[in-house]
Amino acid sequence: MLDRQLLKSFCKDKLLEEPTKPTLRMQGLCVLMILTFCGSAMSNLLKEQQVDFGLRVFSEAAQSHPHQNLILSPYGISSMLGMAQLGASGATLQTLKQHLGYSLQARGMPRQQRLIQRDLASEEGLELASAIMMDRKVLLEKVFRRSLLKAFQSVPHQVDFSHPDTALEIINSWMSDNTGGMIPNFLESGVLSDQTRLVLLNALHFHGLWKNPFDPRLTAEATFHTSNGSAVSVSMMRSTQKFNYGEFVTKDGIEYDVIEVPYEGDSLSMIIISSFELDVPLSALTKELSSNKIQEWRGQFRKVNRELVIPRFSLETEVDLKSALSKLGLGDIFSQTNADFSRITTEEPLYVSKILQRVKVEVNEEGTKGSSAGGVIIYSRMAIAEHILNRPFLFLVQHKPTGAVLFMGQVNQPQNH
Image (cartoon, rainbow, N blue to C red; front, side):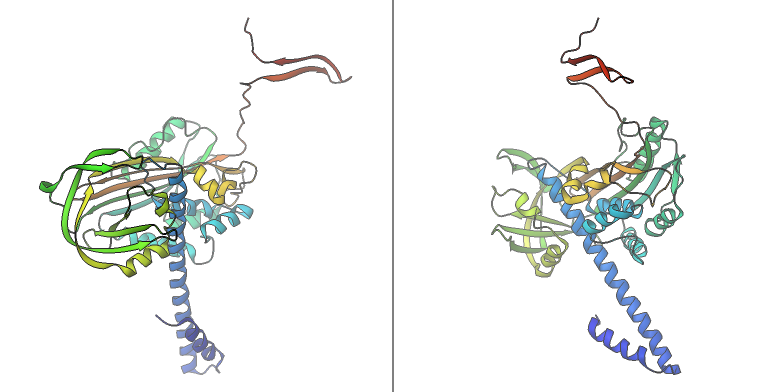
């Protein structure tokens, strides 16, 4: 890797030289080197910030599910927020930029996003897809269309949200097709309405075989100690081989270990983190998670012989990420007053109603099969707001020209006649 300061110094000298033919060639080389270096730096920054943001969302969501199973797709979350960020403007854009750590609207960043997706999609058994379902009444800004195509290779599909049930079928069919059929009913009835303007969709499907499969003949019932202190009997898989392994300590002094289980091809792996003590809550470990921490683990792994015993399991989670994202400082995107998505359309003001993610993962002796379905539901702020008087209220009848109040009352318990 070139030292950044040496590169800058060398190129600065060459760019200041008199423009002879050899120097012009060198100046061109310097520009190419700078562009290559900057592109690599941008790509690394984007990857790290996306990982960090996705892990922060998981950590926040996990606090609301301390004793429950939970599974999210950090990459899927970052992709959904990235798509929304492309349509943000003003203070909303700045808020997203601040908390995501990057802006996909910045020069060169859409291309970096596309390259990350290309690299992921090139892996055997891994499929990615993005889509924008837009209401026929919406006139999209050209810059938003171009950005979506450049960053996510997505083009808008027109649907009629004035018929929510039909739109629901279209979206769920698309999601089922792009998650290997694992998530056939992503959105439930009632999520969409005639005030829905766009749904930004993200799908991920993974089917990976272990590099060294577990022998089904060794799978047996064993005790698993749950987070609430109870013990349950589960099917435990067993394999003896060499694993990448490391032992670590959190800032709070919690000792834990990390073991890596590779899939075929070695470019994908499952990393399993667990504390040494049974009574340590997982929240003590989730708050440690970051891109740098994972790199630190990998840097300190050593090859060891281990008999790995893990449950055969299946998890499925559906989460509305509004609460977690609001706690992380992104509440304005859900605000009918403050949200600014005028880069999507200037025809009417928009805000995010929901950000949903449904994830399903199955782990067995052969490998792992998992799918993630995510959607950003964007509503028009011009929707007719409900005003439901389902609690005690006051009322008065006034003659406007004179101001005389003819009747004044309070209703604590309505009586029907």
